[in-house]
Length: 91
Image 1 (tube, rainbow, N blue to C red):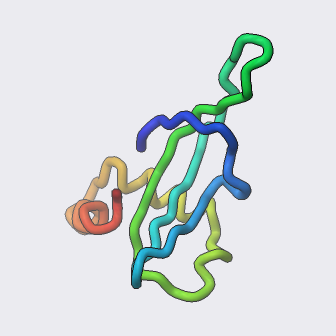
Image 2 (cartoon, helix red, strand yellow; image 1 turned 135 degrees about the horizontal axis):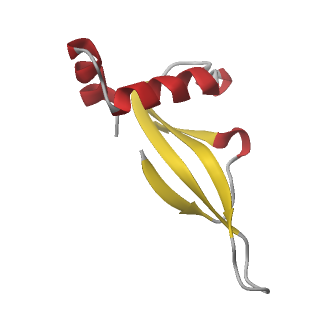
């Protein structure tokens, strides 16, 4: 996870980018409006998680909460299997 600054919040709190036969899923959590002086554009801060998985049809219909939960679990993997999965899919 990293904290990022955003000028706008993606619809659905995630985006999917296809790169060849892989998909990068970028998810946002804990979105907060940043206080700005009057006249300046709104900005947001959010926790950002990214995972890389093989591309497949139907990814746009993914269950955001399931993927976000899994990305958070892999931040601090507790098992050897999770450590290997994290190594392979966390960006």
